[in-house]
Amino acid sequence: MAALRSVMLLGPMGVGKTTTARVIEQRYGYRCYSLAEPVRRVVEAAFPWLNGEPKSVRRTYLQQAGKFLRKFHPNPILYHAETAMRTCNRPLIIDDG
Image 1 (cartoon, rainbow, N blue to C red):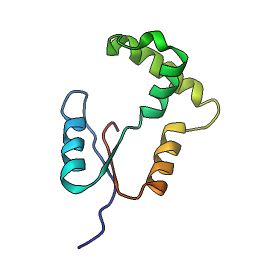
Image 2: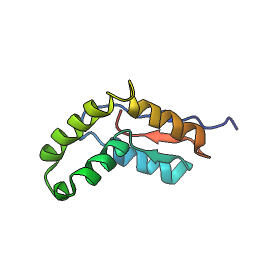
Image 3: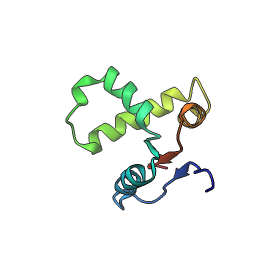
Image 4: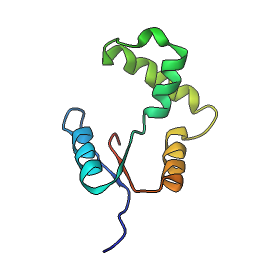
């Protein structure tokens, strides 16, 4: 059997990328990975009062944090994903491309 490769799911919001990724994770042993997770962690640490706010409110903060992080690295989100792919012991299923 061929080795499994990491996969990225693309599509508009709300079409089921995360749901599909979770099914693939459970059935085939992939690890779910979110490109936005590192930025989410930064925003949660810097703005804890946003917890529980609607996505529309948090999204603005996430976008601004992403712009800020690019001042320090040209593509910090891709860098983090590449690092995860190199260090994870199983293939990734990336659900928010």
